[in-house]
Length: 273
Image (cartoon, rainbow, N blue to C red; front, top):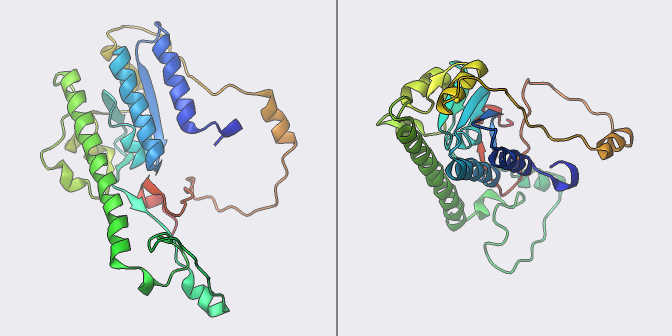
């Protein structure tokens, strides 16, 4: 969340709205460098991209960075063309619901939770339940939610890649017949993703630009980058901000903060251990 509850989804939506209403914009390059995130946010961005292409007929080209996995691939799937570096980490098609159970620790220190609930499933996913108190029905409900979301993910991939292949008229890649065997949460290199039809082309940002010009049927164009405007209030927030000293271990990536009870499209290589 940003200023005033302004989310990444809001930012992406505003940028695509500007591109849609500007007749001078002939194509959009969506730079993706993400391990994923919450299911709803990923699906919202997917819908924005899909609607933009349908209503404007302007192609969207996904330019994958070093990491475009799970939810990062989810938002790339509707794009008419996907470019990845051969060393890009992508794939990780799957869903995860993550949580911790610290009841054993509570028992050791003599803390016992008191629970009053209106229904037998109201405390599902509670982190202070004993493992033996988690019923088979609860596990079945949660797994059913995960499976339902996973089926949606696979349909997004299948429909997105099929639609792209139809628009590209054989220029791009189509999904391999056995692609679902690789939709088991495993990560893929860009090179392997190309072989399986998850991406259309290997290359860098310049390759994505060249492809955008070709799809838009133009020989030359200026590149315009949309950015979130700086607000004077942000400056005051910087000066007025006071934080306690913390120690941060830099792993080279931003580890996502998972919330209890949320479904996620997250690359397993960035999950906290």
